[in-house]
Image (cartoon, rainbow, N blue to C red; front, side, top):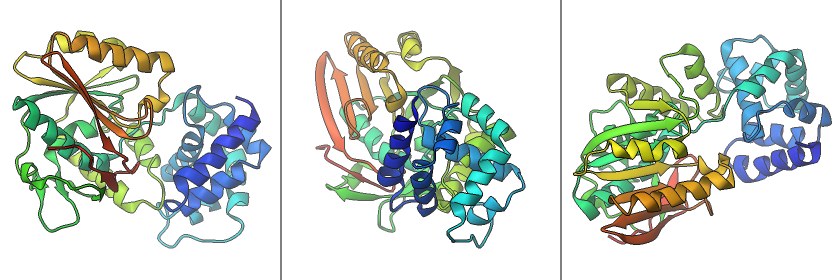
Length: 343
């Protein structure tokens, strides 16, 4: 990728993703966008990966591993009282070139994977909504599952701007979120939908029992986001009680074969959040076509975003009848969501 395109990516990342969410990453990404030497280093990044997340995650990973450098003094995930001064980018650039070879290796080999546990705060009502349509146990297939933390949405506890708690009230994990637009139909949230089976498909399965994988996934969480780190750590505890089945491979290619083993008395739910943006256009089209083909022989739901737009969609084929519904916008970290599904 040429430096101009890389620069635009960092500029967009700073403005669209970081503003109001991570002051540290907004400042760093804005400066990287103007620095050809750091952009040149980023040209080592694996094709198809979101380069800003990959670079910043790689630097964070080395700091969490204990790499000694004064850059750590700016990271609230590493020190209790982080510095804020004009020498931040100077320290960042020095760190990058002092650890250039390690960073190049990470940029070439690591993947930016979504393990944003709080997204389950909107998946929980979505799967409740689906269960209301069919009254059958759910068979979950997550494409791009990484460590599989979102597959455990039925094992977490939830609250939505009020004292009432939904889901598994004995869970290690308590997720909070808010409804920005629309009204969440709370009457069906009190009962957890039955899950018959769950499996995750990913090109690279992350094993959170591995110290390296655990630390890498933790490094992808932005330094200021203490609550996200807590959610991640708690979800890993929950996963160790009942780990889901995870299969390494191309989820789109494997989908038809996986569905063959799912019993007919269940409702198939294929889902993925913030994954399709990393898929080639041909894979997106193939996935949509496969879901429609499977719908000719089985009832199936497809929950997704980032295929045509950023909104969360709930497509279904029930008894051969195709419907396309849009739930609405969702915050990338699950802090809020819109609810436009009619009950």
